[in-house]
Length: 219
Image (cartoon, rainbow, N blue to C red; front, top):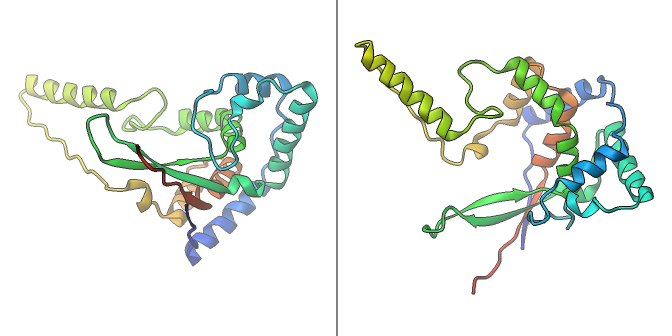
């Protein structure tokens, strides 16, 4: 295993401090009911890859009532203090094949079970923001897909041809796109667009945390 992390630059640190203040100014959401937590856990994939903590949300679906209360209490503590337990801030990076016919691999990050559960429980706030903010030009939205975007693009070209006009498409492929994201810019733009600050702050804590590279041998 190889273990490493990144040290945010000064601009990123300042942006994260501003985000923390904004997040703390927002009233925490009401506690999640035990029934909803149990339902979300039961809907989880029983075969999804494990993160650093070794738990899947599905593993908690059969907890007794006292166990569900402890899980709900832990989620309340996270929301109250806007901080994760240390094991949640450890991410596992592993490699999967791009396709059955290619030898090339791409890295994916496996987050902890608690973070995955929280993300599902709180996604309604993100969906409301998305519904209120998305523009007609947006393609990376809920319910969309690469195929849908391609079909709409081709339809626009065909319509232009029928009208006797010239059309063109410029497509840019950003290699290692997520490695090009600037945290300071992301936070500044997100706040300007009124993205929910609590959800963003807790999410960035995980996605800017240290990572463990897991290398496995092949038979």
